[in-house]
Length: 413
Image 1 (spheres, rainbow, N blue to C red):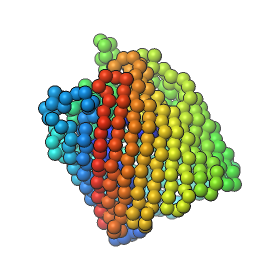
Image 2 (spheres, helix red, strand yellow):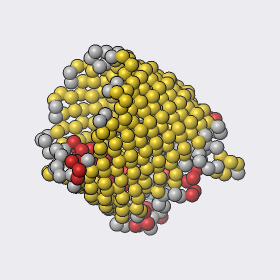
Image 3 (tube, helix red, strand yellow):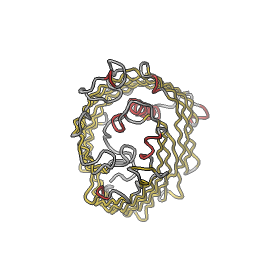
Image 4 (cartoon, rainbow, N blue to C red):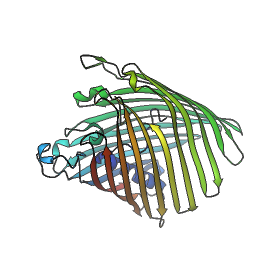
C-alpha cells in the first residue's frame, strides 16, 4: 500500500537510522520554537548537531551466536558519536515558499571503527501556489546512511545512498471537491558490491478525488501505480536477475473528525504486484491502514494505528513482504519547553518467496520506546530516547534483542 513511501515499523534500523530520526525530531521542535536571532529575519539558519548512541547489539545477532566467532569481540555493545553541521533556508515569496537544507555529518564508532563513515543530507523544496485553491510542492532529497544489520545481516560496512524526487498538486475544484495528484521517483544504491542485487529504482504515481464536508470530513477514491527495477543487471544462479515489478492499487481514502478531540485517518486498497522473474512473489489482495488520534487536551495526544501494508523499498528489495501490525504513540507536552513521547509497536513481517533465502518465513517484532524533548533556550533542543526491540523469526538464528539509548543536541543561529 505504501508504494514508494517510507513504511511504518521497519524490521529494525541501525543506530545511525535512529540517530537521524532523533535529529529530525529536534529539527521539527526547533522549527516550532519562538524565532530568535537567525540570519536574514529567520530565513537562513546555521546549525550544529551532536548525537550519542549506546547500542547493546550493533549487528543484531542472535543470542545463540557467540559474537567472538563473528566479530572477534566478546560483546556487541558500542557507543556511536555523530557530529553534524548544516545550513537551512526557508524563504516565503508571496504565495510561494522555497526551502533548502544541507548537512554534513561524521559518524564514529568507539569499538567497531570499521563502520565509521561520513555523509551528506540534502533537501530542496518549492511549495508552490497558483491560487489558494491550487497548490502543491516539488522537491528533491539525497541522504546517506548505514544499511540496517537487521535487514541485510553481516558485519561489514555498507553505506546506502538514497535519492528521491517528488511533485504533488492539490486543487480545490469547488468547496466540496478536492483533487490530488502526485509523482515520486526513488533510487537506492549500496556501496557493497555484493548487495547490488538490492539496488532499486522506482517510480510511482497517485491520483485521487475526495469529497469534503463542511466539517472537513473527507472521503475519496484513489488510483496508484508503481514501476520498479534494478539499475544494473545482476547475475543470480547463473542467469541475469531482473528484479523489475509493476504494482497497481485502487482504494478509498478518508478522514473523519468523530468528536472535537478524536479523528480517524485511513485508507483501504486492493493491490496487485507482478514481478518479471520469480513470479511466486506476485501478490494480489488488500492493504490498509487506520490511525485514530485522540487529543483530550491541548497538551496530550495519543495516535493508535492498525495496518496491513506492503513493506517499503528501503527495507526489502528481493523479497515480497507483507507487514501487519499495531502501534500506539502518546505525546505529552508537559510544559512549554518539555515534552514526553512514547511508542509501543508490534509487527509481523511475512516474507514471500525470497529468491536469495528461498521459501517463506516470518519475523515478529516487538518494540517499545520512551523519550523526551527539551528546549531550554530558543533554537536549542535536546532530545533523548530509550528503546527496546525484540525479533522472533522462523529462520534459524535470525532472532535478536537490542537496547538503544540516544541523546541528541541541536543548536541553531
